[in-house]
Structures are given as structure tokens and as C-alpha cells.
Image (tube, rainbow, N blue to C red; front, side, top):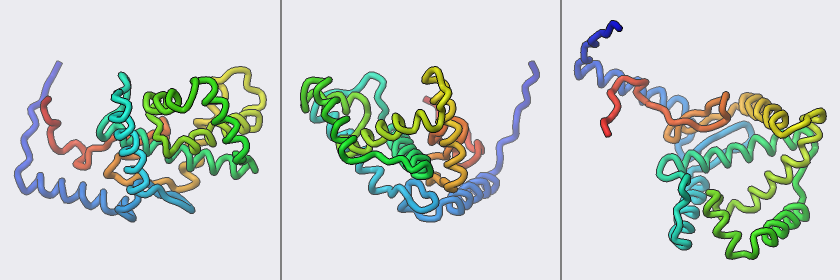
Length: 211
């Protein structure tokens, strides 16, 4: 295997690359108070942080940390994914005249309460699932919408994988149509995975920190 030793950029070169990266960040972020923006709406940094802080507070309250739970920047991106998914799915539903009615959300909440054995158990289940209690109704709304959309977007589907494939395609198309933009502070939107991914603002110009 042939290896090449690359010359280290001088200080002026590093500064230039950093300024270029900063310029790209600023140009792609129209409002620093928005975690994400799209046609007709936005997800504010304040709202995103409220979800994150609620989850952290509830982990402390219940003295639990899920084994596979997110933390730090990963938790923030995970919650931003949730809010973006909400915006995209709501748009998909709106275009098909589908809505989650208050009574349907209440019924779903009652079903979950009964299935887990009460409010205390439900609160703990939400913590372990990485769902902020303030976002519970939003989560229930998504469940209702997905259930009602299934026969519309994938009428011939014979299993869940076909429904998910169709839904992923619609989410990607809707993100483009709504001109979804993520604040680079949190990462970038990957249209293939429908998730926010971490980015390197220098474009790989600087070496990764050693663990």
C-alpha cells in the first residue's frame, strides 16, 4: 500500500480555511435562533433545548439513564430529528387531508396508560424511550397520523417494511419541497437517512482530536 505524507498547511492557510468554513456556516443559517427552518415554519433553538432539558431533568428525577440513551450533542440531534419528523409528517398528512383529532390522541393516551400500568410507569417509559413529557401529545399525534396515512400512502403494502420504505421516500421529498434547512450548529440534514448528522465546519481541514 502506498502512503503519502501531506504537507501541513501554514498558519495563514489554516486561518483561511477556518474563515471559509465560518462563512459557509453563516451563509446557510438565516437565523441563529432557529434550530431548523422550512417553508411556513421553524423549530426554535429555545423549543429544542426545552425538550432536551426536560429529558435530562426527568432522567435525574427517576434516577435512570437508558443503556442506549443519547447524551450531549447526540441527544440534541435526536430531539431535533423528532421535531423535524413532526413537521414533515404533519405536512404529508395535511396534503392528504389527514389529521390527528384531540379525541384520537386522548384515546391513544388512555390505551398506553392502561398498558403500562399507570402514570408513574408511563413517565418512566417515556424517559427510557427518550421522549420528553412535554412532547408526549406530539408523539401520540404522530402515532395516529402514521396509522391513518398507512392505507393512503401504501395501500398495497403487505408488511411494515413496505410502509416504512414509502414513508422514507415521502419524508425525503417533503424535506426538499419544504426547503428544510438545519442550523449547522447542530449538523446537517441527510436526505438519505432523514436524520441530522454531525458536520465538520472545516471540511476536514483540521485533524481529529485524539481520544
